[in-house]
Length: 426
Image 1 (cartoon, rainbow, N blue to C red):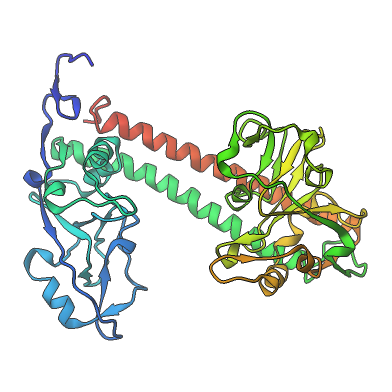
Image 2: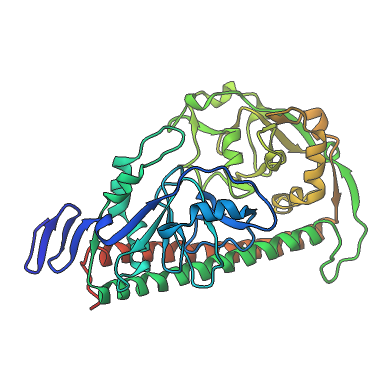
């Protein structure tokens, strides 16, 4: 990159000529925390370890307590955290950095973290937090981290991180701008969590008949799944056999990984994995039509036991249901197609899936047992009204998710410009 007047070339790229560039240890003290096994009691002090260092501020108000001895051994001198200090994770979630807030009560330092304390009161804690969240540090971490399953860096490597240090006033201005961006992100996150919670509560009320929409009062029927569907299996193929060529293929892992409860084949065609096999060689019961429901027959945790997706495929695009799936094809018109996106998500239905699931490390459900699960079924017009209301809630949630994504992109752009001095605030 061209070095213009007022700039200089550094190990981190082109920076303003009046910014200091050096090792972290030159500007902040770095103190390691040794491995000590804590004994949890009710009258001790909370511990800050990797789990707690995953947000902007350390929050241990609801944490378990440890012993007073452990606290005293770990908090001598510089190890005693105080407001304005930063706690850095150097194992597993390497590079996570949280600030000790002014309101925080005393706490102890746990294993696999280190304490950062600024050498000058004029330095900005918020600025360093922003720097550690940027690509300038991410590139260094990528070069230094070792380990396969769990990544880590040692304390000397932390001390040697190369950082940029503008003047105190500019540090504060950058920290303020990034804090404003964080505030916008947090407000969108909170709104998103609230809307998801409202939708979840509405589903549990509306889908069980505890709450009825205006104008509906008819009796609900309790139906077994085999009253509603014919069940079949999928076509087994491994993940290694999938590519970008061939016919669409639904792997059970993609159901577990799907945040939605439906797949729109037309809209998501490019992202859906493909299996290069003529669809005519696939049994018709394994080909997914519009309105089919696909359940997983295996899960590694209880939460995934009832995972499913509804297929949106009005164009009849060849779509093969795959390994570890159970395909449910309608026997009749007792379930509205939009309603199917929601009706299997109640606590009562999930409880039945768990009851019929078998296995230890991996739990599974058979076509025979899934047929025994029961579902309260309202009249179709009421189903459509419930689905319409929940669809509107989904649209609101999607709008907030979009706003959140844009806010995060804006912050990333700000960081790139502000932390390299391309945009100066003072």
